[in-house]
Image (cartoon, rainbow, N blue to C red):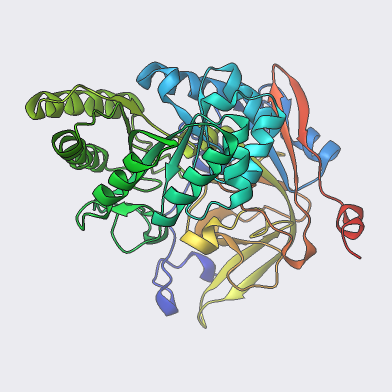
Length: 463
């Protein structure tokens, strides 16, 4: 009898048969997706930096974030080589722990924070405040006060009211605060709508086209305790079209010219934000950072020569492209069952002991991930499969539609790759699923970065 799960037809309700995948393909670890030091060992298990993932799961429990420290550092070094370490501001919002702040500092990079909490974590590690840039579309008085008293290097202004407020707080602290104005250049990045940040109808920054960006610059220049050093823009996140970055740079440079001509001001810094895309699945490919850097720098230089401007310092704010590929999330397989999609077809469902509380991105952005069996090699027949979490939500789906071997069973360990960016950072306690532990690995040794949250931690904070 033909297994109905293997019939190559289109499912009802718009579902399609997943692309066929061989056992060899499934047991492979795509090098451009998984951490650089990930290996499948001779016994079929997976290790990272010489540390077995099954051993880590046994010691620290699951779900578990595992970070390849050398991979993280090497990506910091690559960004530094492309743009200059002083011009690379790691975006803390992607993934921040005290250990990560120390790694970034050790590699000579600067840091981009987007909240008071991120700033406090960085300062707690001794990260030099002068190498921090502070962002946020709704900075509170307490956040601004911490910025000016700690000596944060630069603040990115995001709203008209923030200009006067920061000027006031800087005056109270007796300092002059360096600032940049965030500009919306009107570039449509080829990415998900909710992570595209350069179009007009969204909350960040000042419009270039409407003139509000120039007005914000004028107000900033007139502020007694603010020093306008440059302009900032951000095309979006997970962007693969390098052309967007270059076009944004050229548009923002027009404001450099206008300020020079009308206010006789020479700005020294052009911050082009982050957003460099990474590979989440075997069939995707990351943006080549070296090529983008060379192209951006060359375009800016040519444009400045044409406009008669001094070439500004070019800054970038990578987060995902540094943290994302360095990390995997390990889960234990729970319940497994077949679900009827049509009268003739079923889809295999695999439930794991995490889900949207440790990785919200599939539900939020329809993000895709690469999942592999990590305690052994698979040997079954690839069939249509969906991997789901343990939450009381139909949308709690990690892998929507793939062909996975049918021998993945309760008690097995699976891992999703490229979970370093915006997974732990967005984690929650939904259904009181407590936040996972985070472990780093290096040279055959593991170090606990973040303890697993316990129910006692939660109860102790409740009255």
